[in-house]
Image (cartoon, rainbow, N blue to C red):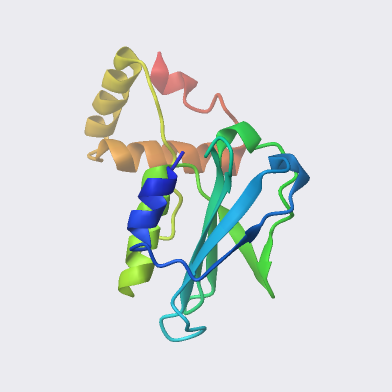
Length: 171
């Protein structure tokens, strides 16, 4: 999970608000720090971090891109199944759940800089070396990069809802 220090560096220590955070899942010591650039539409963005004031454990971080009507939230995996206040970020914009700190930082940096960014969600994969090597070979046979091949696998698994669709190739 991102640290308070990393968050502060990301927002260049610009804190515009802070308050107790009332989410029973996070306990009684939850506190939120917010950084807003003061704009709502053209170039508007805000970032928040929610953490425990005693332990400094980070519960979640959020990034709101008002110009593009996008909202991202990275929740500490310990609280992934907790009720953290629903999915609505504002009006008709829902939170997009992120899976990795790197993805959050990449999107946040682009939002701050006002540049286009990849809206896809990065999914961290930890595979055994032998499986990774097999996937590299399969990607090469299809003239794809490993990332393209894995993205194709994940999309097919989601579309087909069949975790065994690769079994014929995998043998």
